[in-house]
Image 1 (cartoon, rainbow, N blue to C red):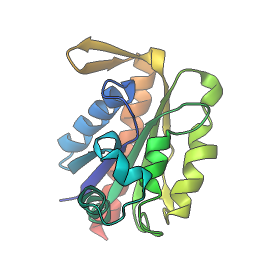
Image 2 (cartoon, one colour):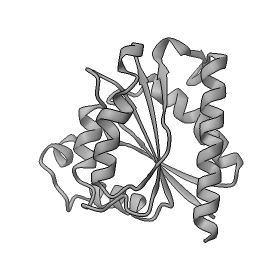
Image 3 (tube, rainbow, N blue to C red):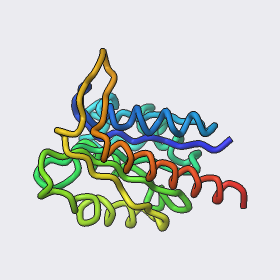
Length: 180
């Protein structure tokens, strides 16, 4: 069974990015792909800030990434870039921690002005970690995500279609990769 690790870089538990992740994750699991979700905000702050490479939380998270076929990296966009908490975790991955992984970036931001944050802020770091197969990301405006029930999100139709198509492409790429 193929494995995907989801890295969520949101510093808050109620971020709209979690609603987007839930929708993509459901599609992955429906395709028979096992998912593990690393919410970076749940890793002890001291481990992240003091780069405690040997902490149980960091070792465990890095092992999940190492054992995955693919990684979905999701983040809110603040100040035209991904979050600092995500950067702190990415800095603790091994130098080639994403080598051989398929990487699918997702981002939620407040303005269309930050549309290129995936390409100009996030992708260079993912590439520096060895990722060679970084798929086209999905950028969602926060106003395109609404909470419809306790912890359940709905997306505007246009973005729902884009996310579904991009996640389907991610699933196809994982299938091709794992069948080799």
